[in-house]
Length: 115
Length: 109
Image 1 (cartoon, each protein chain N blue to C red):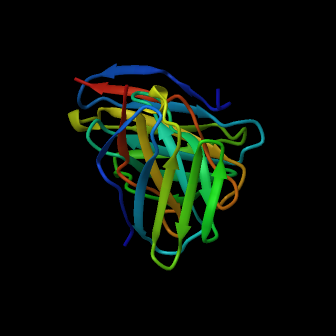
Image 2 (cartoon, chains in turn yellow, orange):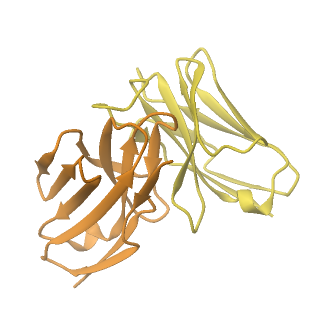
């Protein structure tokens, strides 16, 4: 158990819908990262927040957005869902803003299926 | 741009030694990480290198050459439970953290 929690574990929805994925970082961690992992692709970095502010942006679609709240939990919002958005979405957390000596710890993931 | 390469698949025998290579080109460098990921599960941290050389951690060792943009993960005394994907990742600037495509290792009896 990494200490990072994600809800829900599974989510099944239809094309065109909007969903929200939730992540609670490890106690004391200020950074939260979101990743997407499709069946045939590696881990794709989406976005990072540090202490409530956006710090780095990866291959995140405009239909997707995220935020980190004052209690440090984070939400990833996915809208106008398409079949290709079906994937495992991981959240990870770390203490530092920039990963150097510190590593990041991954949550169990949310499996999103878009029908 | 940023690019990380790893072999797609490897096969080895229980009890043997296997070396998984990773080459990278990234903007800035704050360190290289190796993760293990079993199918459908979250990645788990294995090792971290920021200086050139070998870092040993039990049955796992990781090597880094920054001038060559090259790293490898060495797994000794392979066990069946080591069958998993092994992800190389680099911490740099901009996108901050980039993962390679992963190497799927199959350990055979």
